[in-house]
Image (cartoon, rainbow, N blue to C red; front, side, top):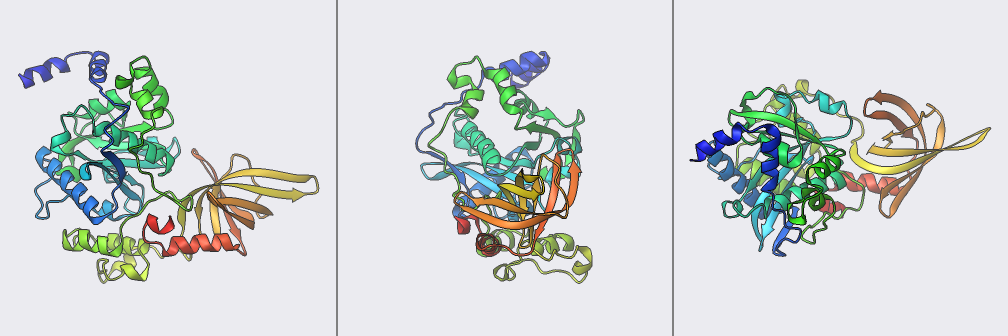
Length: 418
């Protein structure tokens, strides 16, 4: 009977299939107060997330059972990956991970062409490792929809993300297209996706800047419990726990040396199985002394396999700023969007043309109550479809800038910067 229903559903026109899928939506704007959505940060939370994910992937044939009972990947070790969890009465009942582009790229970029997404500008995050506990899979989205809503808000408000990309089984791609307005990257199905045990996969993307318009078109006239547009963009949920940040950082790393050692050395062989290049890249990220004892040892050729490190570490930020230039005609002010900072410089986007090699006064809001004032000049200009970006340098940083860089260099997790 199930097979017959799937076949009958498959012969319907796409528009009718999508309308039928949307009619099944149940998104409670007032979820149970026992439900909590947050960043998974403790050993217990992460372990529970990885176990739910393991069981879901094994059940779907996306991986073979692991002796640890967990699904842990190299991407979970990166500070540019955030794992979210849904807790009900203190128990983990759902999880999802967002992988922003880092030193290892994205899992799906090995087989899908992401260039059409990149040309639109903005940061990309791959949505991965989605799983809901078996006891909550038939609750009409009571966990899934709050988890998806939290993920969307986190990506836009905290993760500096414009585009979401996914690689899913062909049987499930229509759910993402119909419910959330994802667009397929290609019409071709990849026969084997290594990141899911060789299962077939279809790639898709969602532009978060266009998503409100698309969801309003599909759900705008529905009542609240079936209106994903109002659910995602109008409803505020007290169930959400947001990270507290002192500075306008764009990552929320949680991996302490102890957590890295537990998940990637003791509970799994992830570090042991990495090649020299990936090991060297990992050393370049975790360069604090506390991490050295738990990172995988480099092979004899590792030094030749990776690029030399920059003189100063760079940190991903999203800070508003302003450049004031003075000349014989008076003062000219330029709005800046600072996206990266280091001890001796920063990178910023500007909508107007800036003069190079001319010093000006720059004010940058590093945090909600912290600003830095610098004498800086733009020394490089790079034009891209995403915008025009300038590299700035300065001779001397003020105290707030030095304090910010020191905190970023010394902090192990996002809580250290709270």
